[in-house]
Length: 353
Image (cartoon, rainbow, N blue to C red; front, side, top):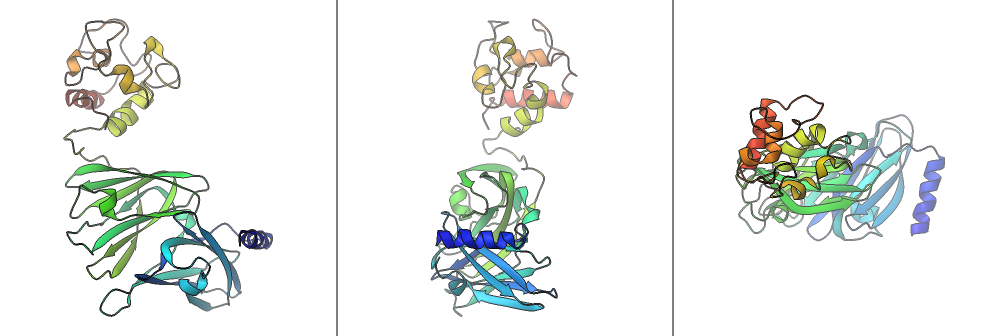
């Protein structure tokens, strides 16, 4: 089978096929959910397409179909990917040398009273991938059957590491689930498994170092599905840390301030250890929190709960005394807003959040 897939891919490549155009994030073929995959060819030329289905475990099956000019292909996943068979859902990528192809996917729940409760969504253009995806409504109901789930697909060309952030009542929660996905590989999980301590309505952000495409699924207590595409956003929102912290170390302190003002190659970053202090993301806390200052042995570099007695803070606040040069050296002083973020973070315990 693998040899056949390789040969087919080489054949399509020799015909001048473009890069993947469309991604069907999640279709199914199992006892609870059946799917149909639809391809629409609104052009005046016949379209040869390559369809590659990939499960979260990396299992792949590829098939080819021809869709005539101004015609539509509607086929169940059961017959389309017969070798893949029943099991967990999978993402499908479509490649063709014909521009302008469109489509849809229909997922039907078989457990409802009708035995066929369909939901329809459109495939997503590969070029619309984003490093950060927002799933606007993923409720975690108090019901053993009803549920919700985010689905993400790696739309990049390299291995992607994906993290999930949940938001509820102004607080941000970081999931313990971090997944690595190959190009074209999907991942799906119940929202309740990503955030086992939450219940009720939440929104979720998936973030990665590669562009992602995604789809939100919601199921009622009859396992009837509904679907909606995730939305691209610029960055992961901050929110309030559930521990009660006003600011986070990762987003507000290090990425927002230290990375560009202190952890630079000429000072305390990228391997530089001016004053014996490396402030790279993975080193800053262990080099500063409850570590005695080399310039003032009466103070810790960062004294959790007391910014004014933290030597690092005294070096950046022009209103406090210290030994040696003020920081950042040979650069503009930090703004009052930046000082307030660092001061508050230290006073609230200098947490690794």
